[in-house]
Image 1: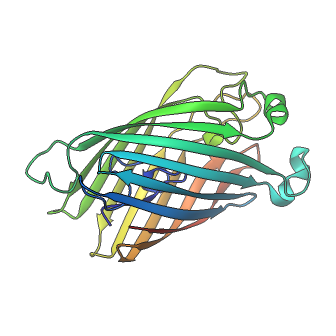
Image 2 (image 1 turned 90 degrees about the vertical axis):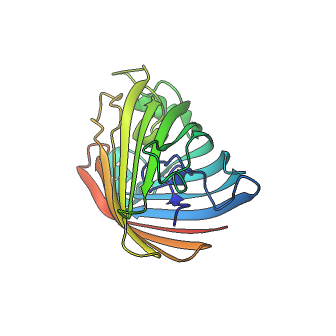
Length: 259
């Protein structure tokens, strides 16, 4: 399970936030890769994310994710057609700078990585009408991850520079703010056994659009790794208030296949 699962934007890590680890189980002389599918069902919306990532010599990670935010029956309430879907594509890269989260057990120094995610959302005209300044943008982040095998704990923290509205699905920047904001993302996981981990994520988000306040996201999850090639994750996710439709919380499921 040291390869983690796939974060909703395609990076290796936890569900809401990336870890500093490189996806897959490749060593410094080999490669790793995975494909994933994630779906979150909230009170009014459905978020789906699919994609793939490759880890190169435990140093570089390249990823791609396609997201769809299905408005379902709430579309007409928002002035959209029934089942309207906000979409975006995300291309990511992550570079391990120092440390080894698994093997550096005699050091307090965590594994540290930096990354970037280029995001391109659909329907520029609609996003502009909502107050967004752009339909594409780049998130940059730095992550630190520490695996404490003697305590069965994995702890991660990320600082992200972003203009993204609702992860980028509602564009970038807005009429209330168009500057990069530094946001915090944290993750803690407890390894119950060699195949089961429980954990929680927390993610702050910028508030750029005046028509609707954006709130922080959080999740509590359990992940099962029957072997090194498959993982299943089930979670309760709370995305906060979305588009003036009240609290959006519900079940989150994800499957990852890789090596």
